[in-house]
Image (cartoon, rainbow, N blue to C red; front, side, top):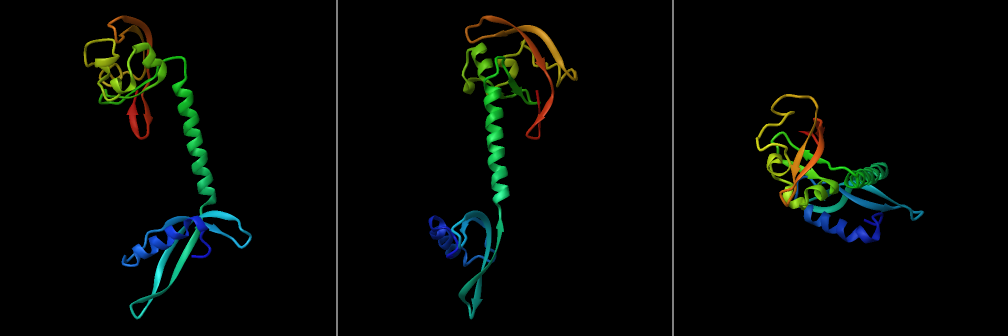
Length: 178
């Protein structure tokens, strides 16, 4: 355990003790310290060495995951950047699933409608923002590939607000949405 970073050594020992009774130990991520005092992340696969039913040591394999960790950090940063851009666009964006349930709404759409996110997300689109009182979607029900139309949405005070709506089917996180 000496090669594991000081701040993670107790966790590594505790994990090892907990898993001595397991047939297969799960791999864990730790930071390793080299002789030159350089730290880097690894996945550590460990198994106890048993002799006469007594653990006498540990054997393991370490895999350097420095590149993976950097890629994960870049992905998180990229997702945060994209989220910031979408949230701050000067026009409303509403993401609606095939079930016509609203998945996401940006700040501009919320401001236009005059509602909070929690009042809209999870609701049927035709109950919150749709142009009609009907449960009929040009894309999902009428099989259009793109819908651009003028209409009115009703804000929180019942006022009709003229808007130009464009609905385009896309796939987000494996789900078909508009």
